[in-house]
Length: 60
Image 1: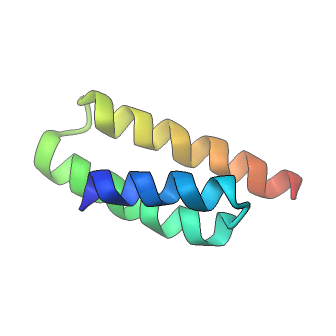
Image 2 (image 1 turned 180 degrees about the horizontal axis):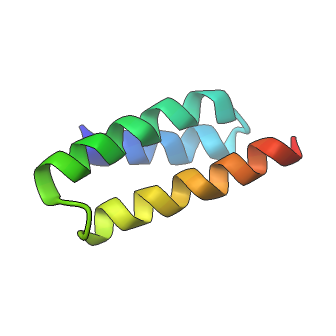
């Protein structure tokens, strides 16, 4: 689910649907943390994506 969530979040982001993206990324982050740990690259990338999205949402 977490990779699918990341893929869907990318699609929503391209469409400008930021409110749909954040919950998907947050869910993926929790799954990656539980399954892979907080030092895994997928976790780190998703964490960075959430931060970048929040910045975009502030600009909106």
